Image (cartoon, rainbow over all chains, first blue to last red; front, side):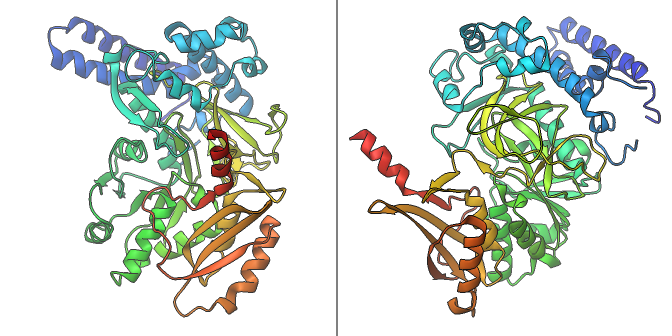
Length: 63
Length: 448
């Protein structure tokens, strides 16, 4: 990522990935390899949220 | 803003006022999480007449009751087995078990979900990045991978950074040194006690000067040694490497770290943790730098068994100076200075075991190991200090310096016993060098 200036745009991407993975996890209950890996990926997405989404959601970005 | 310097260039340089807003909002989030999911937390806050809605300002946070380690032990007798009712997730969500070492009593079990493990390694990623770990590093971890959290998260964080990790699990000390040599490992993580022990074994049993090995940075945890200047110097001289302090705990997480500027202190990760310092006597929250108190800490994002206003007993103080690294995360001066339950009165004088370590390790003619025993002779407190003389060093050559320095740094006189090099007990993980036998006498009296 070259530019941090628009955290909102970055955050939108994080939330889209989260939404897709959440859907995948719930739709794939009969397919453990998909649901469990999606769940695990969501834990990583949570780290993106802690690193960036919270800044946007709590309106702490000065850019 | 440079992505090369900081793991998170936004959070780590965020002005303190905004960090406090972040902390407050995250505090409310974790408080609400715990209140609605854990019987333990709900009962605790209900008993204090508080709900999360009552926390409206940052100052309100101190109204929330503290959690003591002894309370966590009590919780474990309840369902669900084996964690008890502080658990905030279904048992099937728990993916990792760890427990405290039991240094201060019965061990406390710690459940974590996979997300919590991601969080653990995220917190450690702040630590390692600040200390200069990069993908080119080959990291050797001489740690007995087991039920203790120790360097597990450091391992995962190093992997996350892109480093190559060599788990030095069940190898003995000599095999570990040979493996470092064989693989040209560039970094290592261990307790200060074990860093010195490895150097001693390499030099005196294997004829290998550890400074000639390829290790260029070492991250310490588990004990305060890397924050004690003389101990840090011994480690750095022995290994020819930069030694960094870091502090974390099983129930808390990896909450602070020394950056590569080595500012004689540690940054508190104020994006992930809320640290409050409480006056040891009055209980008031200390905001200003330079006043020691005990740490009350909240892990703002830990979910399975939340850590909210945990009374850590660690003694710390805010530093008045910012760090030249540019991080806005505040520094605690000298790292963790000691533990509130280790700081004891001897002959009416407050004594911290760390100050004795600082003196012993600053004298070249003394070995790394020492032992302090406090007891009573009649009604009078007595401190015995056992030290090792390095080969070819005489007691006469150092005794005056040792006594003077001890008097200067601790205001106390000692009965000093000198031992040959290698005679005192060696430790591989956490050392037990301070024994207060007066406490045992009191306990005995209570039992009778």
